[in-house]
Image 1 (cartoon, rainbow over the protein chains, first blue to last red):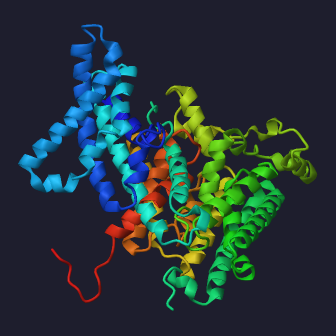
Image 2: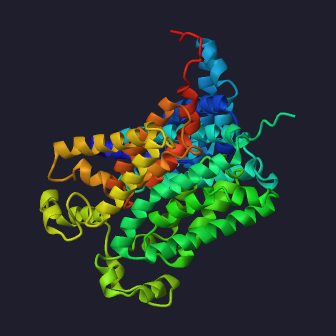
Length: 194
Length: 343
């Protein structure tokens, strides 16, 4: 039980997918200008990433490995993720127009989010089993959303600050991301306590 | 034309900021006095180094940003940051470490975000976190007790200046560290009550000697509260959060976890509670928000301190809560006067 808890804590806080693994930086800088869009992107990514880790595990273990096709892993994961995203979008559009309106443009954007590809590949590299893979995927997704929302909040606040001209915009956002990653280093060691 | 970019309190009379900062500095004096009694006048040298570095950094950045130097240099906010850094760093830290930390705080954490009143992160805690991550060995060399008896002031100055070698007199651990290491090495054979009673670094209720330094901070903090410079919400929330978690674990396994009293008077708890989480700029603005800010910071500080990899968690806890401030502020708005709460 504690083993699973450590996986979640590790994925959300200690080895945060954005701040420590440096994955998914495009949405992190691109969609973090407003709090609302950050919430939408976070929700959509959480859903897709969790489903994608599960699906990639099944494909890897029951399709690629039995036939010795491991060299097709990256390619097949990309196709899987793209298919899941498309399928999700179509299902949501038909069944829940409201949710589709909330997630809207963010669903197709996720296809190009490297965190969604990175996490299944990390799962393979760490030899996680199915439950571990799912937990790691969900934890990474929650960590991604958490950091995205916090970052958006801070950026909205900085908008009103008298930042020196040369640092306005992306420059001060990068400085903030650095300080944020510094703050998250405080969690180091929390996933290894006995 | 109305100026919308300047925070409202900066539009008030300038001297009021200076008066608040001077009182904060005065409130640090009891703690500093106890520090001098424990470690010796060397801490005064460190305070002076930090103050000079802070004023130099402030003057430089004000010049680059073409802002009135006389106005901002004399408001005392840079000196408060400098003193907090000097008190949080190990007293025997080399001079350049203090200078690097202070300049990082003033230049990056404060002025890149627009200077006084606009920084989202607490500058002193940014300096502490940046230095403990970059120079972990130097930042954890606390002087062994009784160092002042074996080394003269000039020898201590040589250590700070880097002229003398940083020998094994420096190998003392903070009480928090001593407890953590002993428990990890002991593999369950040692328990906290025996450790506290037998080891030399522990005093009456916390670290030997250090307990009086932190009591000094408590005294100064209570004075600030009595003068209404700080509100009670954030400090009380911080102390409550830390003691709650410490108390539950202590009651559950008194052999393995130290008492809340020990944790309150160890490390940066009280300095943090009264001088860091009360920061009006990087902290929350609503009363409810301040309570949430303090309480969560207390919980995090205890978690990082006891279960994490760093000797103390106050700095990281404050930075992590600084990140959450916009969200907390947004959801803890009091209802507008005259309007009913929608339910």
